[in-house]
Image (cartoon, rainbow, N blue to C red; front, top):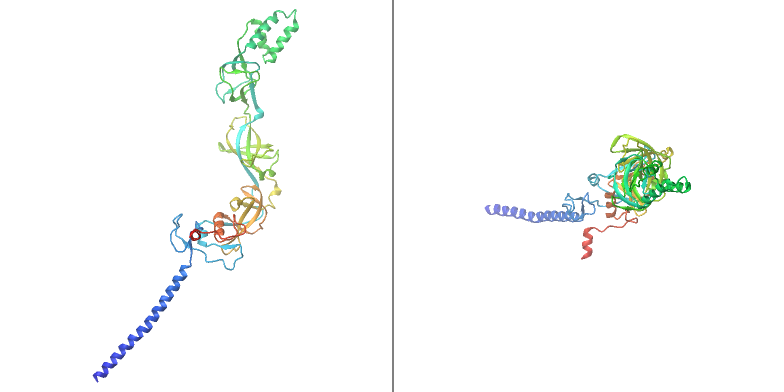
Length: 426
């Protein structure tokens, strides 16, 4: 009896042991198989940086550029057109990507803004010249910006030629009854040298030659340039001073070549300056330079400003605002400058093709004039389409990495990642 019980116990233990060996190993094998499969799935996943999509790594970690945590890359673009691609919503949020729907009449105030500086009105600048050869003995005006009046003495000049002419006048004055033609010729000679009637009569009456002769201002204004120093020798016709009348000044504004078609002479323009932010100066365009500045790709536009109170100083920065023609407003589609990427002669934007998902596609467009900080769209876009207006370069980088059409790759070709580059070097 005892032996029977012992055999039964041994049989039960043997059965349990066999079951453990059979089913326990099977379970372990399944778990290992599942684990290996999971690892296999994970090994095919790529990780990227939301701020630097060119970074692609086979495992999670930190971005080697900015240190941010890497995020799973998109597994694929199944179901999309050839040129389309997706981005994760997380990547879009981190890169601050924003989109805007386009439509006509985007430039609501219909204005054009230009910037430039205040300059002297060259038409009101007089050059004070010497009318005879000589040496500058003394300057009575010594610094730029000094105000002078018409008839004010500016300098004294010693001129051997003028000394001889004065002696001739004194001699001819004593013979004017017998030789009136000689007397008249000598007086006319001094008048050609811009001596006044009063100065000539004073020389006749005194009978004395004046060696250092005064130079008087011909106009009133502000001295903008002193072109000689005491002791300099000057020739007849040499410039001594430049005197500017600042009662009127020029606002010289820069305009890009694609804006010139919007401007015309006589067009009203409103000028403001940082020195007087609450004051506006009204003017009209008086001149549009016919020659393009090839280094800046701009053309100068000039407007004349009244400056009787002297508020506007040459060198001040100013901004000008022009109201454009009304027919430019209703049928014009304008998009922000930040939406357009330029490469050579092409201008491209990125379209959001699905309103519910972050799916994008590059589009080549044609743009025209710049109006109120945006480009006029000539072709390539339709009203209601949604374009990227912030983070455009990030979208373009993502397109390049996915081998889609991009700013530098019109046909679309997979951009080599850092890992692929290392693989190719092995």
